[in-house]
Length: 255
Ligand SMILES: Nc1ncnc2c1ncn2[C@@H]1O[C@H](COP(=O)(O)OP(=O)(O)OP(=O)(O)O)[C@@H](O)[C@H]1O
Image (cartoon, rainbow, N blue to C red):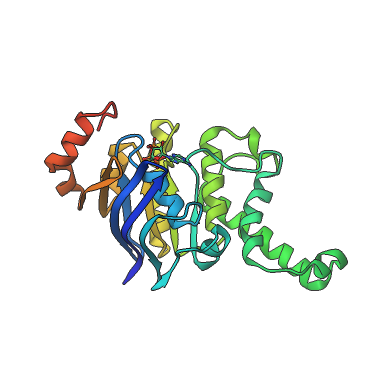
């Protein structure tokens, strides 16, 4: 079943057309990568899906419902979580609290509960902590989860960001360059983590420049170049596509 359906998406910033007719779909528990040279429009596409940018044309539907005009919080509540190319953790909060923030957004509490520390408030707090610990175990965090997030090594911070996104219990996870800045061993672990997330039944859209990882993990690859979609297919098809080879050889990004 199709979970995300992006059709004829268009986004212009004044005269600059960042996305020019992008169409792709993502099925349940499917891993789809969006690749393309720098500035091709990949992050802009994520920003359109998640309500950070308002597209100038096209449609975006999630589970049959239009996402157009929805705010980022409403998109997240509908079941789409994301991570960011530049990490967006709360550096001064503990690692655990960063992930607890993900569950908190889902488990609603009233101000009344919080002020009076009602039994419901305490139950919810305990549930958030248990969930956060579960997701930190799941992503394989090795560092101290009580220390400030900013003290963790970079690769560990990436895992925390993914744990926080998972704590929102999404049906679709958008990962923006999860392997950027990781060493070889960390990239191998990231590959394994992405597959384990998919095995939970969560669909994944991946923006990634590491072609080794993309080719190994993706079921389908969508290729953008200057905002235009130039290919959509299985990894072995995309790898041999002359338009894709040209786009990469013609840029300074090495495929
Ligand atoms: N807020 C904005 N205002 C103006 N132009 C923007 C904005 N966001 C993105 N752009 C432009 O849109 C185009 C696509 O950018 P985008 O960041 O989506 O590319 P990308 O494929 O994600 O690139 P990279 O791989 O470098 O992250 C670029 O020309 C960029 O400068």
